Image 1 (cartoon, rainbow, N blue to C red):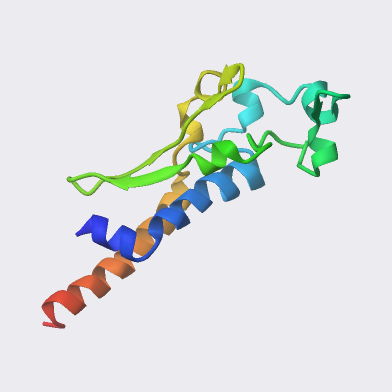
Image 2 (image 1 turned 180 degrees about the vertical axis):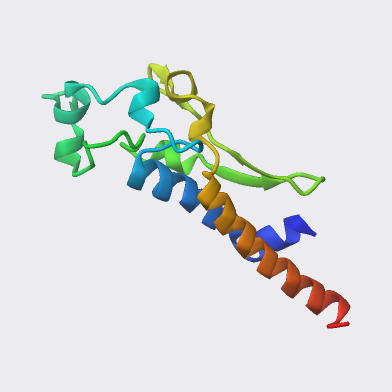
Length: 141
């Protein structure tokens, strides 16, 4: 039932948005609410300003430099997937491998996962969809 509800209602996309956009990009925090720079360090000057002739820095790309977002090309964010296991658990996975580093090694595995507040958002959405599913499938009883 959970897999049907998640897939039918596009909840995977909502979960990914909460993890990548709300937590990582907008706030620069992991699933525990810890600032990413406190875990893996702040951006280096090369990351902020780039290296002429090699790569553009975050400033030139118009990306935030006041917090670590783990966003540059968007490939890491695009790697996020949500699956539903047989027992109903909803699991978020992402590919942490970037050229020359593994984001899990530097920033921890908690970069994938939802904060307590975002878990509450998902629980409320799920609750409403589950109630709707039960009413539709089994009548208003």
